[in-house]
Length: 408
Image 1 (cartoon, rainbow, N blue to C red):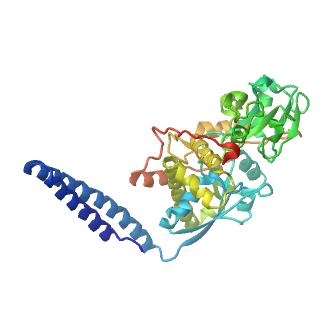
Image 2 (image 1 turned 60 degrees about the vertical axis):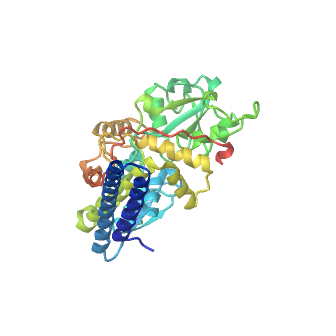
Image 3 (image 1 turned 45 degrees about the vertical axis):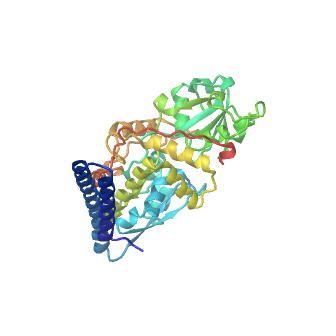
């Protein structure tokens, strides 16, 4: 049964009264009076805050005669990479914004930005270079919230391989997934003065780390929040214990100037001319960013929400992923979801300056001004700040996560 603001206020004040009586039984008269007064005042303040929150929710519900149906297309299957959206749905943040959100899982054969552009979803999550490439081919979409502020892509090799820089990939078997996930790798290879078609052997990699663990390839593509954990969840047959970070070398593309913006919320550029869709976009972005703020402060709960929504990944792997994703988002100095023009320009420069094996640039020219807007993220941050939430993540510190065998 729903607890109203009035009943919650009554309950808190009642508890305060009991506390005050207890204090008076074990203190002097003056001390007990002061303590009781302070306790009652604190309780009234807490109750007032709860009443304000409840009232705001009630006002939203009152103004919302019918929830607006909204669909969100993900890039991949349910996992903590998308924790903020599932938290916003399960914890009622979307409903607070009068939205009924359906989250559509992705997969290898699903291109979120194309689904969005063709009207198959109202919003989509996609990496910026992939989306800009699709945009150049006619997909009219706009980045309305840049959630990830850092790239999570790595190239992982064995510690005894001697591979610590892009230059060291020369003459090696280098795994990559393709499907647009290889852009930073190609940029790193090019930046090192290597020819991807002749100075090393590119190998199509499955979406796991088995080829690396079996030493069929020398370096494997990995995300900080997923595949890198897979090697640390594997048992070293020589020791019977799990592999440790010191058993591997890692090339982090953020360290070599070729990192590009990744997960962002994209909207239909054409529909953004419609005031109703603008309003829906604002409400969706606000609730989504609130979900990500919640996951920053409640990583375990969000990992549990993902598991409850059907993820097949193990508990320790899921918590690792949630923690690593938080590192890619926080801190967000300009506010969560706000695009840093410097990082945007770096992404565009890398995309326009990097060619695939056919000699074609990821993006032929810098995108126009309608490729992104900070309007919705900035308005969302202002609203969430007014709620008392920390939208920049100042002081954020990741938690410690212990991986178990197989991620269990």
